[in-house]
Length: 224
Ligand code: MN
Image 1 (cartoon, rainbow, N blue to C red):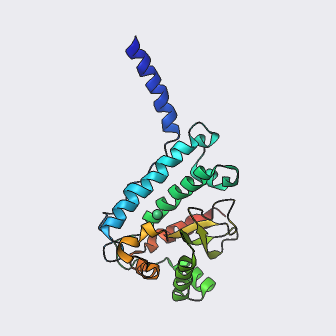
Image 2: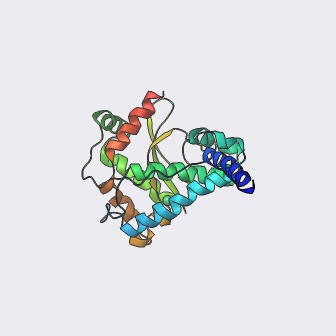
Image 3: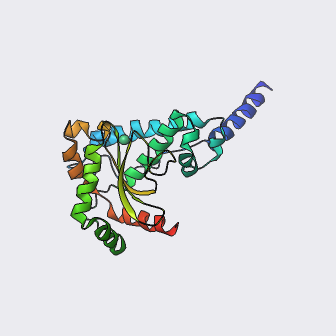
């Protein structure tokens, strides 16, 4: 009888837990796959410790709240009404899930013709865009992110946010759908680059997954 009771309670607990189960997607390459630009130890700690903590702390922060039944985009869109723990960890989870996918060991991936054209039209050239993006990351005081996003009119823009905020949040001034995000927290680069954030920001283009960014660009435009 006692055993049955425990089993029943566990089943209810499991069902509740599943509801709030934000999970990391597996890293699409090995920890050492980006060596030369991002070292294996940084990738391992970043993904398996920092990334994992955002997901599990998000689950804890929303446990027993209406956000348990919401998707991540919805949660991000209403951060002004939610606790700092939800804001930081929902942002952290979303940002890192995006970050792993826009990196790749594949060499010389290229933006689609459509994205390439939009970058040239918006920023003047690919080099001018990279410079603007790197500057956004370099100028971010303390921890945060540099973003390339699509605004509500389908236009590209570069911005930067502090902490784990991102352009999907209602609290952020420059809103849009991020298609490329660069993590400039020290945990993303300090073991290899120490204080030289600019060197990390210039190396990251060597491992950028332009196929993924192009895919996200198409998806962002199709929602307009
Ligand atoms: Mn990070």
